[in-house]
Amino acid sequence: MLKAVNKIILEINNPDSKYFEKAIFYIRPGNTDYGKLKADADDYISALDNSKRRKTLGWILPLLGIGLLSAGITSVIFLIFIL
Image 1 (tube, helix red, strand yellow):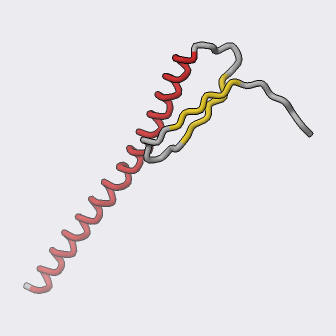
Image 2 (tube, rainbow, N blue to C red):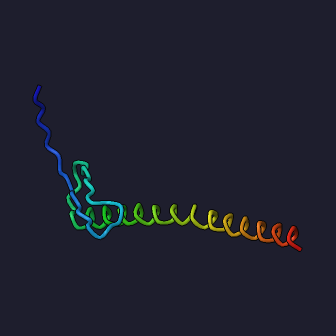
Image 3 (cartoon, rainbow, N blue to C red):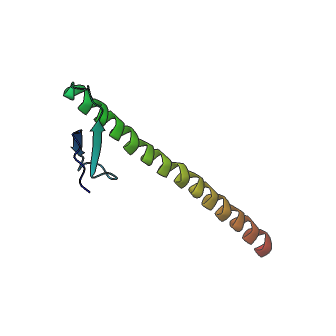
């Protein structure tokens, strides 16, 4: 079965992003301000890219804290049994 669809598509290539290569937006009928559409799409991609970075830092910092805490506890226990 063949289906013909007439849609406006905005494709944004983002080679600077660490996470995204390309984003494809299907534009709703009636929107013709392409400059505003591109700006909104760029803002949306930037927000997604930044939220990924924040999530990565969100689990690295607690993991680092747990590692330092366990190293400190191990050092104290070692000193208690040695001395």
